[in-house]
Amino acid sequence: LFGFPYLNIGKKFSIMPKNMLFFSKNCNFCPPVKLELDKHKIPYEKIDVDTRSGHKLAEKYGVEFTPTVVQCEKRTCKIKEIDEIVKK
Image (tube, rainbow, N blue to C red):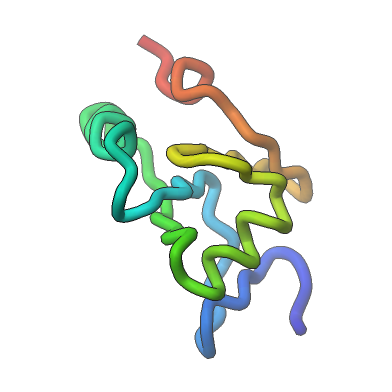
């Protein structure tokens, strides 16, 4: 409806986050990625692919599995490896 930089998440709208962590409740690899992002104080929005709105966002950004991190800069969003986001 509003286009970039807003996400339509259910009935609420939010400003586009810099990082989105796509996860599933049954994903065994998701908690370690979340812990790594938290450890390095990297802000992100969790997107549950098991919800209708999360599934739509996953399709929009080409997310095929969890966990996946999508990083947005300016008007471009790309799937990134955790090592690309977390500069050790």
